[in-house]
Every structure is written in C-alpha cells, then in structure tokens.
Length: 426
Image (tube, rainbow, N blue to C red; front, side, top):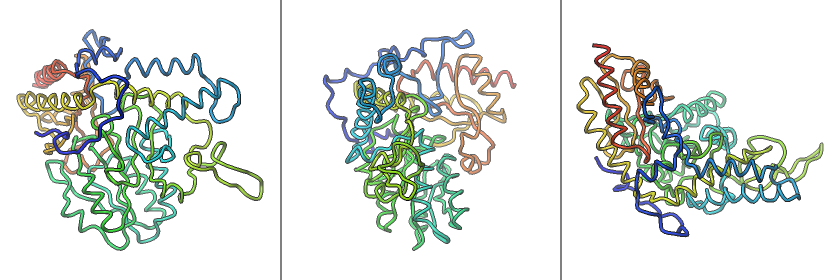
C-alpha cells in the first residue's frame, strides 16, 4: 500500500529557526502528557485520533500562558493586555495562512470548526448563488457535516444534490463524476480524506475537472491537515475548511480558507460587534476581511492554541512523521489480517491511518466496550457517515485511527483486544 507522500506533491514548511530533529516516536510521545496515563489499570492506547487528537505540552502551555499573562479582549482596547492579546491572536492567523500557503491572512476566517466553516459557506455563498433547479455535487463518502448543510440549503432553495459514487475499495468513481456536471451545477463540495475509510481523494484532479466546467470547489480538510501538508494554492480550491482539535490544537477553533475574490463578494454570516465599519439605524457598513465574518468575541485562546499547534508541527520532522505513520498503517493492515472474521472497510491504494472494520456479527459498541477494558480507545458507530455504512450494508463499524505518536505496541494491543472480544463472544 502506497503512502500519500508517494502520490502528492507536498510543499515544505517555512524554514524553522533550527532544523527539526529526525522523527523519533519515543521523543514525540514524551511531548503529549496524556499518553502517560493508565485507563482501566492498563496503559492508555489512544486510537481515536480521527475524532480528536491529543495535545502536546506546547499547546497546553500556550493556553495557560494566555489566561495567566495575556487575558483580554482583542481589537477593542488601547490598554497593554488588549494589545498583546490582539497581537497573539492575529499572529495565529498569519501562522495558519503560511501553514496552508494562503495568498493572504485576509483569506483566513476563524470559526468553531469544519462544521461551522461549511455552514458559513452554505449560508452566504450558497444562499446568494444557488437557486431553484441548481445542483451541488458531493460524494458518497462525506461526513454528515458536508451533507446536512447542503441538504438544508437545497430543501430551502429547491436545488438538488448530485453524488459521486465510490467503489467497494472506497475510491471515488471519477468517470461518473465527470458526467454529473450540467449547466445548473453551482458548487462541488468534497472530502479530502475520508474519516471512515482513510481514502486520500485526488482533490487536485477533482478541482481541475470542476474548473473546466466553471464551477468552484470547497474541500473538507478536517482529516487531511493532521496527516499531510496542504497547499490551498496548489490545490486551486476556492474554499478549504478544517478543525483545530484534530491537528493537536484546542477544541472550538477551526479555519475557513476562502479565496479573497469569493470572500469579498459574500455577505456576512452573523451580525454583531467587530464585523462592521459603521452602524446607525438607517445604514450599516460591514468591515473588511477577515473581520466581516468574525462577529463578536472570538475564541482567542483557541486561536492562540492553534498557532501553537502549528509551531509544534513545524518544529518536528513532519514529513518523517507522515512516513512513520504510513509504515504504521501498513503494519496494522498486516497484523489485522490475522484476526479471524475481521472485515476491513476501505482498501484504497492511497490512504492514511484509518482502520474501520466489522468483526463477525459482534456489534461495534460491544467491541469498543471490551477494548476499553484493555485501555484501548477506539470509535464505534456510524461515524457521522451513514451513507458509507449504507454502501457496505452495515449499521455501524469499529474505527481505530492513527497519529504519529502511536506505536506498533499500540497496534499489538488492539489486535490482542480483538482476540479477547472473539473469545468472549465464542
């Protein structure tokens, strides 16, 4: 199984003050305090990274430093604390812009997460540009956050969703995709990496096909940013969304990247303080980017924590981490083949560390509960991707999702736990 690094052309990060040391998983694990604890009397084996990643000490310290030494509201005060809080908040925006190679920090909108970013696009661009009879293209493997907002918009406007199917390996059928375009297609909104299957979709090719039809593209990058470098200008997409908590930052903070050309023409998502230039009872003038889309007091600490997470990723050998993770995924696939009655979902040629499976007719909730008794944390359910479950004709699956701080010993503990599950259920 090939690594995404073999297929994608990745952009290097900005040069760090010092070269990052070679990737060493033991040293990396020491950066994450929570990994040293025990659960149910067993060492924690955390394999639920697709839901949320753990936080390095550097991020935890950044949050503590903000609340201890910098706590003030931003953009509103002339006093010292407000100025340094504003500086830290806007520095985080610049770090995000550099990290994903946006053309300007004006193209970076802070939101609560991927879900809010997608809803922002739907309620601004979508409401203005999509009307009765128009069409939006999505895929069969989308997370609910990239289905429900568009379904709601289509229901309101009388528009229609068109769906790119996938094969049983969990790969999109691009030949079918090319046939879905009509004169009424107004947007393509696709997942970069499947949260259930781990499939790395050929998003650059998907964007190029959409652009050949004059259609803009949004990419849901929630699962991509923790695993590989993302260059929004190289991808050519108009919109890209992701969440901080999946990339080692705090919860409640995320990013909408939007091409400035599009953001400039879109109306505000919410009204309130900070997003205006002037207000009276007869007329309101909205602020410039990015303020126009950031009404009210933002998640200042979360934004600073996101900036600290980016600093952390830039301080390690991130490409080495991706290669390590790809090797770990290959090892996991090899040893899981030895578990009788285990059926893997998603065997795409290009995928990252997501291992979703069923085990005989044992309910995934039972699998997850027994694994928890061994200290192994996995996810069980439909993973907010019910169309994927329908494709495989199952109600739910168990998912183990990897990060670069996981080890072969973690995988071995998972496999041992699965053998225990089988023994319990006979």
